[in-house]
Length: 425
Image (cartoon, rainbow, N blue to C red):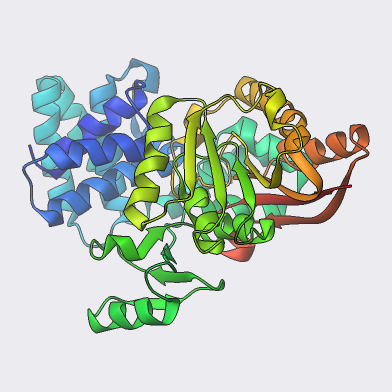
């Protein structure tokens, strides 16, 4: 199985609910008997098609005599990866993209399928996105429909964002979602320093630069060496931990801790002195936190399976600091997990808001007087962010808002993130 065939198989599994894009891709690549170059192409095709699905499907609609719903899912994905190679990738010859797609269509369809794929792909040109923009400009589309097609984001999400921000800002956010970011490493300061890791990366000829925070380094490509020395973690997530200001010797609760990135950073900031209780609702995710702590040489983390929305009387006013990185829609991390655009619904958000509010209200009871609590999400929807904090403060006079931070991929070059710093009287 070559890169292109592997890509359509992975896209099929993702589309029909067998897993998130990053998890499914990693799993299938680990099993694949192909070289690194082909693995890189597979990743490019999978993420590219998921990212640009609406735009690519609009291109298919222009040239297809069949409606999308009438095309076999296999053939549709073959068309998508063919168009992505031609219109979005410079290094792949058009002939190779067409010929390989036709071969796949014969294997996953029949003779008529291969002729259908061939007929469409022969019409696709390198400037197809420019042609699409010119074409849709002639159509009587509403503003939100135009943004949806051009940026390849679902119409309902575009509409939600337009309720909160102006058209220019929404378009900038959505365009930023389509750009693959640099990888951010968080230095494990229990083992090394930012300067020392930076020197080590440079000596290994790994392109890198120091980040905007005290423990961050940005690199272009993923590395796999000295794994005790770093963790992959966006600066937005790092900032949430820094704003909690955990100190050595304190008793800290990370109520929604898996997979453990923030938990382990809190431990670093505490110099591995004190106590961190790390909760998660699922046992397999709690295991991830244990493994993350062990890998980095952290000993102060105590994990347990616990639903943060259920009140535990013995925890009342028990903690000096509390981190609530609550479950959310994830619309701030689309640039890393593009399938979020297609898997989340309006109904999901309503349920998430209920859970967020319950966790915030419940866990606030666990904070000592004078203690600090951080509420954070990786979304840019105000109803999951500012509106949740406003509601909480209106009903909890014991708490004061110290700081509120919004981060956006188009402004801060980080994940979209919300951080609210609260203190208890």
